[in-house]
Image 1 (cartoon, rainbow, N blue to C red):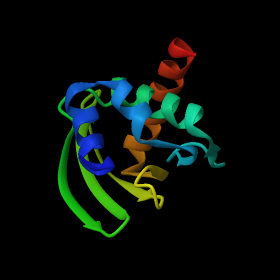
Image 2: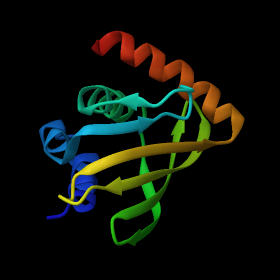
Image 3: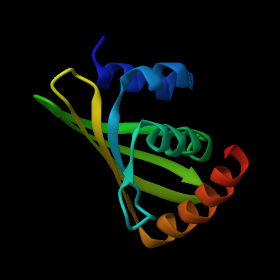
Length: 126
């Protein structure tokens, strides 16, 4: 199973042990609400684990484009009755591990609620 397939399994099962297995040690995470890149496997794991809890309700990927070592996964879910639409941009390294994970979200209401909920979740798990 490649890292993109494993990522789908992580989302489906919430098995964060699988997530740890597919992140490169030097992975970079780009949040839609934090202006600076988050550097390293540990912080990337923390953000993606928190997001799994925040996005839990009816999260689904609606489109997927995978070319070579890059994937664009469009998603939708609802948070506090606000429809969240976004994309995960994932790049793999030569070993097939996730080297970069970038999340982009729309509309502005979704970004605002996501910022609030992610802040609360990060406080709880850190």
